[in-house]
Length: 356
Image 1 (spheres, rainbow, N blue to C red):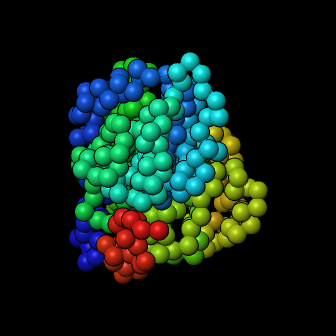
Image 2: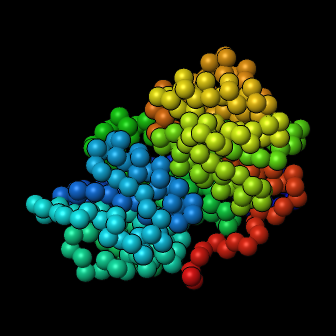
């Protein structure tokens, strides 16, 4: 066990417990979804701050892909200042907008102030997604879904992020009554258990042996929000400059920074696989090291990377989104540990932003 960050480390290593607990409450979550579906929902807006906004980015993509309902991710501050830009300009046939504010604590000030604007709006349904059912957010929303084991001891978000993203996956699956998708989601805790020890050991070894100055995180589709969160974990935990991009966007200028001091983490998708493989070959030719995380990897792409993780499951990439973040969480943790940083007390941060 590390000198610093014991709580954070355990939060990362035990995420399957939060996932399993959330999935065990499937029937309770299904009751909430059935109530919401009695309304004619035209659009769903996922709202968050920081890590919760990155949940919203992946979640909006996933929800629209599974349900077909127009979905969007909006930062809490934007929804607080400019709600009219994001809400549908016209509604007919009793159409309504579903707002899904996401907050681990349920206390984030931008989220609370944004929701308070809609107390008397009959065209809006509010569904809180949180890890704290005894919160301000739950008190001012119409419904809530929460992860009862998602709340970490640590300040750093890890299992709360993945369990709330899993929550959106389950919401979407229940919305379309897709029992097969629900069954697939229930495979995630086992996949986590089967991989976590190997991932942890390999990443710790790589961090011990190699040093980089620049860290880049790339992903497409539902993996873009994952790349965002991986970037943030590197900043919060390892106090290290990092960036994120849609994978192919990295070719349009940012690739100019790649050299032997750069580690590029690529969350490689199924639909984008061949193009991202070609991108990997190009980035490797510039001298950068690659950390490739994906479901099924061929021998050629494995040869490009000193560090790669292949999940090797039958699940679709959106279903794997919570799991595929975990290696990047471990990367940030082990780099912080190598640098002697106390991730329980990261520089300039607090667990909840309650004042602006």
